[in-house]
Image (cartoon, rainbow over all chains, first blue to last red; front, side, top):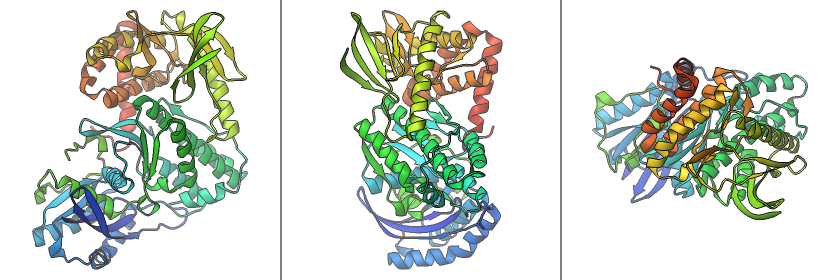
Length: 327
Length: 208
């Protein structure tokens, strides 16, 4: 079975082709074009969607060419239907609908966040993990129970990705800023006390963001170092709480911030303490990509027919814990 | 004297042991190497102090909790009475539903007296000889702010929803009934409203 997946929830427009045989999936191609806002600015939905519109034909044809398949070979098409930025989501959906209706290929709307998790499971081989989803759109701890992903803890305000990006932008970096902050942080070891806000299994980052901005006026590198240490310690603590509460024996990190080495190192240590296996999604597939959408669509096609064209919705707010998982 | 490690909790290692001839629980917040050292020591010290204070304080509200025998701040260790029961988390579904009302009452008592627990999960209540004990006050705070009390309720709701999904509705109903019986309907309504406010601030929450 061959699927095409289209991702366009935020800054990335990506198409991927995956061949599924039984439970195994092979990524044949995954092409991305990423919208880069100017330094110090965030993603403007209109500008990002324009970028996606301009790049969609290039990405699509490159993706098919690299996979060495033609549109006629595709068994299904899936697209990210949410959560995300409305104007951006619509671009992916329009491309998917056009292909589906013209070539009569079944179409599947996919939850972007579930995509991160399913692709992570495919690539790491984790079976029944506690999942830490950390990205620009999500900061959540999840485990699977009775056909649904259940939230054990999450951010009460902004996400870890937003925390890093918004702070990075205040220093004049271009989003995504995680890498810049990580580099600056590695040059300091002077910890400045910052607000540490863990509420049970939940975290709150907004106070930390404001406080770090004022520290950065004295020293940028100390601010970056202290921000990472504080935010990641908060995340690690909630992971420990969830591991201890659920007794899960695997932890898997997915999402864009999974690329951060300091965070991985801390969580690896947490896992050692709890006798738990540690999985992190490969760097190349940590960020948003077509593969996550494609693979989830392929999994859904095992148990469901494609949806009717009139039901090919997009929705900006779509919590992953409201999705029934039947495969 | 430590005897046996019984649980590696999120924050601390829990040992059973003997302290002055009493069979006791030793809760030790060990150094976490992954954490920045000064942040780590600050967190461990603060929580050890807070927990031992509040463990004693809540008894005056009529909340069953372990007796504190000894605190060693240097080792960030609390020695306390052992409650040899079973965490509510591990009880049968029927028993969890039944216990929810009593848990609601205890949380009501806590809030009425100006304390938030900060980590309300079903693992932090122990059933022993038909009495439910409240434990683990590491994240507790003295606060009369309704928002803080709502954070407590929102957490236990989240836990019921994730770990006890099948019985969530009846547990939550019982919990609220117990809570209301202590704090009164006006305060309960206010807190439940604040819980929905917090939930609606959540990421991608459905806007009603």
